[in-house]
Length: 136
Image (cartoon, rainbow, N blue to C red; front, side, top):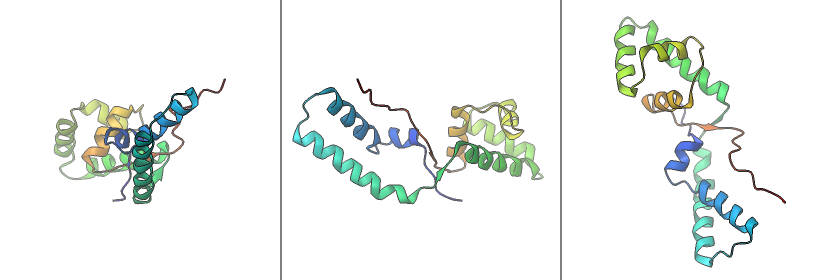
């Protein structure tokens, strides 16, 4: 299985992306930043640049297809019901929600993250645009 990583998961694991965005925002607002703060952020950014080649960058649609395929494969096994029940308990999501996900229903990020963790899939969503610097 290919290694991928979620931007949200990267943020929560202290990847440095948040720090770089925060620094950019603070510089744009005119706040003075110490040398040590700048050095810390640049160190995190350098580490992030080294780590990114380990991940695949996938679009949201491709990620959903990948996870749906995993669930469909589980459902086709002879112990499909057992497997779905075990997975449902493991990620604390009802079987109905998993069935909707598998059959192409609406998917929330929470379920995708839980499934990704259950299948040991780390993903980075392309076109991530949560931070937009304000230009006056």
